[in-house]
Each structure stands twice: as structure tokens, then as C-alpha cells.
Length: 157
Image (cartoon, rainbow, N blue to C red; front, side, top):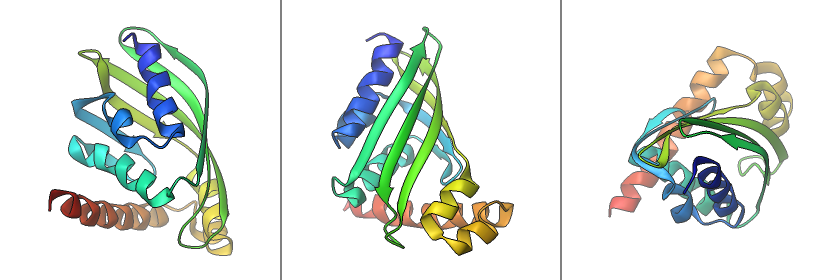
């Protein structure tokens, strides 16, 4: 699969809720980074997508565009629309993704988005006040790391 097609397959699988097809696009030594989870490697990065899709229960809308890639790098724009489970608030998160490829798979995946804007949508007033701070990002990453660790330990059982 050429690099552009790998990215398209990744997001098409995301849009249909198929986490296994998504993570099948990832190299075994994948490194994923975003503002909410920080740096995740290998199985942790794969489990993040499994956990997110399982938690969404089919109630997430994924749109992607502007896919471009060569043999080494690629990028895409994507939008996730969903209800944040903790507050029930609607979130429309606009994300820029950058990719690096190795052995015909995604080796590095970096998602960038405005965390303050996300926090305002997901948390309301609390997000307005704290969402733009490093403190908030650190607390969010601690919380997501804990959720992911619990999910991953259940997957091993």
C-alpha cells in the first residue's frame, strides 16, 4: 500500500469504527503523540484507538481531508465530532495529523489540535478557565494515561 492509501485506509477504518484495521496500519514500534495522551509507543498507542472507539459506542463522526504523502512522510486534516462522555457536551475537534512511514506502515503519528478550544467544548466554563494551561494538559495526560493503563490491563486478561 502506498503511503497516501495507508492514511486513507486508517481514517476510513476510523470512520467505520474498526480499530483493528486502524492499528493494522501501524508499525509494531509506532510512536503516537497528541496533546491529550502525550507520547504513546507500541501497543499503548494501538490500545488508545481501541479504547476510544469502544468508548464511543459508534457515536463518533470522523471526517478527513487533504491527505498527502510521499514514501517517508504524510499529513491529513481530520475532524472528530462526538459527545464528551464525562460531561455529555458536544465536541467538534479539528486535528492536523503528521505521519512518518517505515516498512510500509505508519511509524510516527502526531496529532495536533487546540487543547484550549477542545477543553472549552468538552468542559465548559472549567475548560475556558484552565484549558490553556500546562497544568491542565499535565492533569489531562495523567488521567488519560490511567484510563489507558486500566483498559490495557483488561485487554491482557
